[in-house]
Amino acid sequence: MELKVGIKGKYTTTVDEAKLASSVGSGLIPVFSTPFMVAIMECAASTSVAEAVGEGNVTVGTKLDISHLAATPCGMDVYAESELVAIDGRKLVFKVEAYDESEKIGEGMHERFIVGAEKFVAKCNAKKA
Image (cartoon, rainbow, N blue to C red; front, side, top):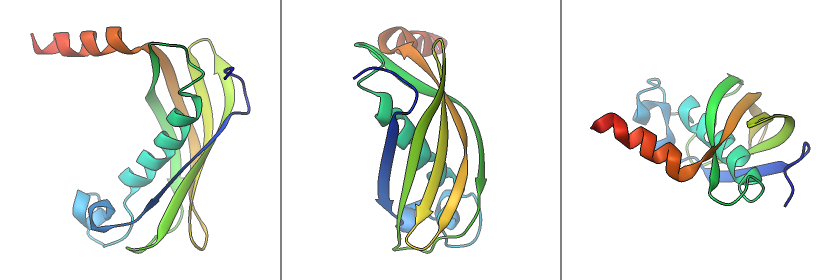
């Protein structure tokens, strides 16, 4: 697969107890949490380009500018969609949106950088030394 503007991704999950704001500490109400909405947006983006970034490389999330537009109850299916809208060297910019079974629940922009997986992990682990 060639890395090019227009690549799309999608990630689907079901809202369960572990994904609720009241369970993850991002709020007190038992609705789909913003941190998990962010996670499905990142997953849609990262998996969409995983094959195109080159062997030994991965993408890491570096920036999000999103809005959480609507609440989703436990038990409902949710999904996120991504579209690669810009490539600037190693920086990839995605438009991301999230939906539940009845409406759009989130939208925004997400940036990821292409990095060498081994070098990135080694540098991170060196912080422990």
